[in-house]
Length: 391
Image (cartoon, rainbow, N blue to C red; front, side, top):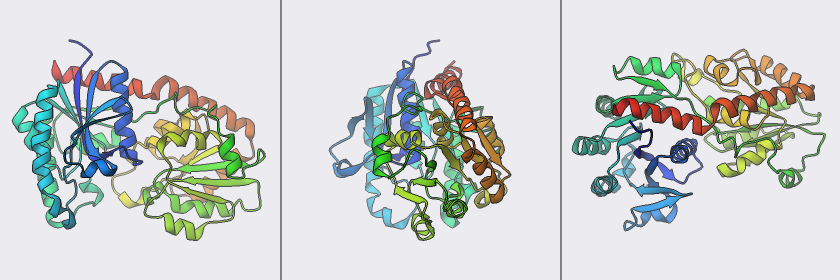
């Protein structure tokens, strides 16, 4: 059987383009699938003014053909007014799929998603379901919404031929819900985009960063599980020293962090994904103080894109020693006891004081990223799943 496939990639919950980490993952794997020789069409929500142009159902983004959808992907009451878009999108997507005639549908799992179920019932195209979160176990839905979400998830699992997920922990959670084959394909990184020698002198000057400053950087969403609320406490321990903390991102905790900001912190807000390599390149240490308390009982099951990008940038990582973090970082960083802020600070201090160690650990991370974590490698692993499903 061929290793080249015609793929319809459903990302009905993603705006194209977007600064959201979900879109970064979506576009990265779609682009990599194309780069390794497959024909791929991305199905997602148009962003900007295109969202309101109901005559526009096709487009492209950075060389990837996009078929637009406008499905309502929320249970919130305020979106019910737009429910007519579900029916319109359904007929448009069915028409576009018939024109594309894909070998396989690769669907990014989310709920609510009744129209994906209807599309697959009508067209009978083999489907692989990519499950990066189970949603319901995270407490995202309650009451009637939870009941509907459970039914839809059950049906989506029944429809698919196989499931792709990111971690062993998540695979074990999914295994309790279905007997479909489950394949682990972690996140990845574009190692040509994220690399140590990206030009960043202009940004250093703009941010008033001197060559003798040690720059500690966090990139990510300002959400509780990212542990971003720990950073002001960490930064306070290094006030008065040549250490600057650079925070790139936005989210629900941004205003809270802004109020707690210390003199050695720089808050930049969200930046386009293509600019992130510059901020990592000017940094000396990259931090990820994750906090799994919000999802207590399930363990740390995430597979954060940021860790792969940190390593590809050739900089040492400081994080907590969760099993899934350890599998990614290996000896390319220092990992503190989970929840022990003092231990995290000690690990950080150790790297701040040892420039040679920073370089050595960063070099190891870069090597691992090139050999194992590039998105093209992940795309080839994904193609192998397609091959097994279609045999």
